[in-house]
Image 1 (tube, rainbow, N blue to C red):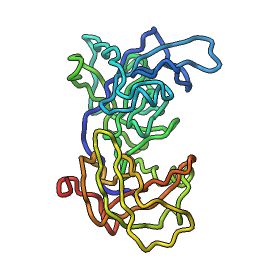
Image 2 (tube, rainbow, N blue to C red):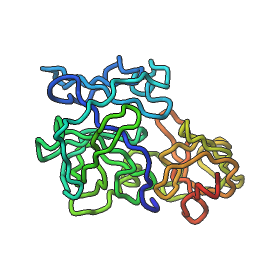
Image 3 (tube, helix red, strand yellow):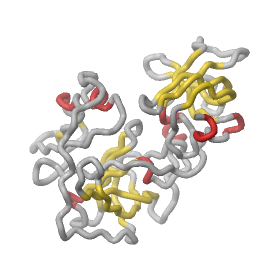
Image 4 (cartoon, rainbow, N blue to C red):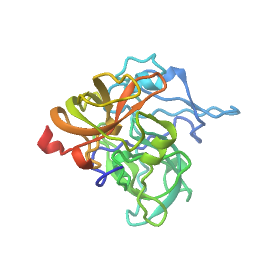
Length: 282
């Protein structure tokens, strides 16, 4: 159940691999705990390495390094400048396959069908470039998509980089997959469509989570705590990036339980499914 269009924010730059070709396979190296990722193909006949630029949120180093990082990550190598003669027609629609996408990090990589357009035939895609009505737009691995190219000045490195924009299904259809993926992977308290009410105590945009106090009076089959966590992907702001929120009364949400038995909020909105108004609630 998603609402609105994706908001606009800062994108993640395309980064040049350290080796001449290839991006590798699916396994993340344990050495990546401080902000960079190392990818190796499996079975490994050759090893290619690349560094991904550090996201602007905490926790990336810990997630990438399986708990061994310090959370903030370490500055990686800036994106390599595009060739001086590089040109990209922003009006041309290209197609490609999503090689990897990290939902909670909000970005991934697309392998272009047409080769020779961008270096290594790979480019970054950020969540706010996805045309969607999901509360937190996302892609899935091996999804076939359509997009334009965007060349921009990377503020941090001071070089030009390229990324995907206006990402859609082939033919221009919206990418709406969040609810279907949740139905496959999440265990819900009372079902995916059952809604509860409560008060959002706080949400910290920098940390990407907050807590909701559940209203009294609900008969549940499981012992759900009074205060439950709500994470970035479940704060429904109509596709916009949620800001710091505090003491927002009368929010509505579902409840799900992860594999460790921790209860969390699902698709938090105002009553009636209305998206959270970030300007009014901040």
